[in-house]
Image (cartoon, rainbow, N blue to C red; front, side, top):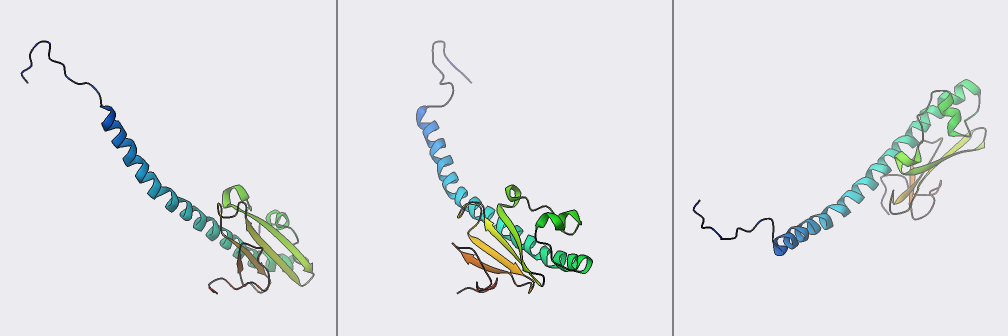
Length: 148
């Protein structure tokens, strides 16, 4: 390269080049963030559904051992029948109830609506998972796989 003394060579990037790079990064982020959010919600919902499904067999095993259903998830954990229901990891809070000796009900609700999940879920001794959008799911909610 042939240069003359006193000739300036630009060093670094110009302001225009930096603004273009920032704009391109902004466009990429605007495209990627919504996809990331919806993917995370879908993963949280899938994990919540899997956790509810595990309650079916855990409750039946508990019933065989003790003659009644567990009314708290920690009882299933203590017996080694179910894994930890960690809301921070799964994005859902879980609740287990036993209205009678022959019935149990499980609930999974997003910790933060529209952030950690969109749907709430319900399961009972029938092993049918039901869902609701924007409200707590219950025994009259549509079954999973049904779109009204």
